[in-house]
Each structure stands twice: as structure tokens, then as C-alpha cells.
Length: 270
Length: 235
Image (spheres, chains in turn orange, red):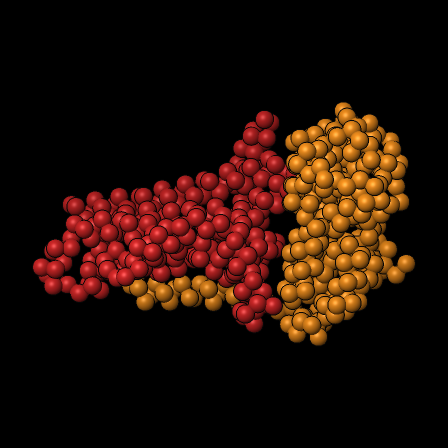
């Protein structure tokens, strides 16, 4: 092939790659909803009814909010209520809706060195971890789960940052990666229940602390504001969010199970 | 490690039943990384030839910079391309973020310095050998560059394979600019990262095995073509 023909081929390849599909929206999402397989369950149903393709970019809540503020998405689906409300009041999003919930749990090795098993008070459990210097692996990535964890530490009166690098280990990575680290070094981890139930590398880890109302985990959904981002696909984005909040979408969320357990509990409009 | 045995049988099974999702991400991996390697060669080989044949002030600095850029961290390239292609960035109006094109751009930036720097070294050694003949024939710089590129073509194939290898193996850049979107921008390496974070270590390893076999086949194919051509050239 001659040089000009090579160049032409290369450009043709690029052009073919950038041909955009009709009615496609991008959802900036937290990882737990993607890693648990919820979208694999919901999106085919939605596409069948609306013909709209939904592309999911799964990153931590902090990064998802930042990407959406940069107009790199049409819908935001995360779990950090305060940050979501700030996103809306900054004019980046139209309105925030409660979508569904589940809860956080503390998981750890079966040997349970800090003796947390059966504790119902998460702040008490965290205090015990700090007191016994038992290893604890934290997301450390400004995600929704990390924000929640920091709030619980503050409520328990412990400043784990002071012990960073000793018993408190910040992985700076996603939920699954942090669970892998936790299992690898027998460290306690706080995780959302959906990721935990669908996680495949549990080792001898089990849920040790659960059921504290303070470990409630609310997911919210927001359409990105077209006044802030003129490129937003408003109509299909609104259709998607309306569907999620409708009886049908809510039933579809409630029907999703992994290993016989329901992962998300719909609560729109409550 | 029970994961290894499971990974091998899983990899075999995936390939045997030509799993549709697997075929899709393999093809996208190839499309993205081969396009990036092709573009990197179109830019890098002439640049390498120019640096090998030309003498100008600041040439040493350019060469040192180029050599240093071979160590560009993929995640930094990804971040830079993201900042440019983001809707909030200067090239946001193109709407390229989260498309295979964005991934090709990022990988091209990542491997062009590798192709340019390695070919510069190969061609400069050759140039030292041929410089006098070029002068004797009265070749222009453009003609000498062409002659160098043609004469070193077999070594340059290896150079381009090094660039391709780096592209198909990296995850940091394509993860950021592609977004690892299922059926749109998911490639082998981002799928491996995803399965690892799901704790599906055997499946992640199986995908890794498929990727390695793929790289091996491409290298073997190129080697076959090259040996055939060399045989004919010296026959």
C-alpha cells in the first residue's frame, strides 16, 4: 500500500468509528449498580419498550458527579444525597429523585480479630476496630461509599486518617478492588450489600455488622440540566428517568435478584 | 491456586463456543489498537527517519525528549485526552468522548513516541553506514529518508509490533476516554479490569489468556510474512 492510501484507510477507520447512533444516552453511574449486574437486567427491558440505548459509564460517585458537571453524561445515578443536592443547586442537574435503596454492611474475616460479629451499632463497631488496631481497608476515593464511611467514622469519634498506612489502609480504588485488597490482607471492609452479594472472590469473609439504620444507602437519579449542558439528550434522558421512577421501572428494580437475594429496594415517590 | 486451572478451562470454553460478547470485545480491541498502531507508524516512522538523517540545532534535546516520552504513563495520556475531549474541554464539540475514536487517539499518542524513538535509533545506525553512498549518489534528504525506511523495513516491522503490543496491553488510557461501556467501548483490558473488580478472578485470568494468545498469533503471523518476504528478497 502506498502512503496516501494508507492515510486514507486510517482516516476511513476513524470516520467509521465516530458514526454516532440515534437516541443513545450516557448514564454516569456509581460502580455498585453496574458491578452487581442491575443494568444488565434493566436496560434490555427499557430498550425493548423505548428503543433508546443506554450507555453506562461506571465510576465512583465523586468522579461520576464531576464527569456529569463536565457535561459528559445525560443522566447521573449515584448514592451520595448531599453531593447530589449540591449538584442540582449548582444548576448542573434538573431535579433529584429518590430511586431505590439498600444498605451498607461491614464484612471481615471469619476469625473476626476485633470481635465485631453480631454488633448492631456500626459506630461502636468502628470504635472497636480502631481500639484493637485491626486492619481496615477503606475506599479512600471520594466515592459515595467512602463519603458514608467518613461520616460514620466522624460519628464514632475516631479520626482514621491519623492512622493511615498502619491499621487503616486507603486503597484509592473501586468497591470490588477494595474488597479484593480486604480479602487479601484480612482487613475489615465497609461495602454496599449489592456489590457484596454479587462479589465472586469472598474467600472466608462474611457479613459481621448489619442492620443499623445508620447504614441506610439511598440511590438518587438526576437528569443533567440542558441549560448548563446544551448537548444533553433531554428527551431520551427524561424518558429513561421517568421509566425508572414509574411503577414498571420500580417493579423491574425490585425483581432483580442475585443468588436468590434482592439487591435493591425501589422507593421512588415515598 | 485453583484459579489457574479454572482460568484455563474457562478460556478454552469461551473460545470454543465463540462467545458473542468475547468476539465483540476482541474485535474492538483489534480495531482500536491496530488503528492506533497504523496511525503511530504514519507519524512515527517519518519522524524517526527525519531525526536519523537530519542535523539541526536542538536535535539532541528532541531525541532525549522523544526517548523519555516512551515512558508516558497511559493513565496520564487518558486524562489529558479526556480533558480535551470532554464537553467542557476545547474539543468537546466533536462529541468523541466515550467512542472508539477517542480510544484510538489516546493510544496513538501513547505509542507514537515509541515508534518514533525506536525507528530513529534503527535508522541512525543504518544512516551511519550509508551516509557516504547517499552523498555519492547525490540523494536529497527526502530520498535518503525513503531509502533508509525501505532498507530497514524488516527491523521497522518489529518496531511497529512493539508499539502495537503496548497499545493492546494498556488499560489506563482506554478506561478513562472509553468509559468501558458494554457493547460500545469495552475492550479486552477493560473487561479484565472489570471482572477483577467483580471478584471473578478466574474469568479475568481467562480473558488475559485469550489476550495473550491473540498477541502471540499476531506476532507469529507477522513473523511468517516477514520470513517469506526475506526469503524472496535474498533468493
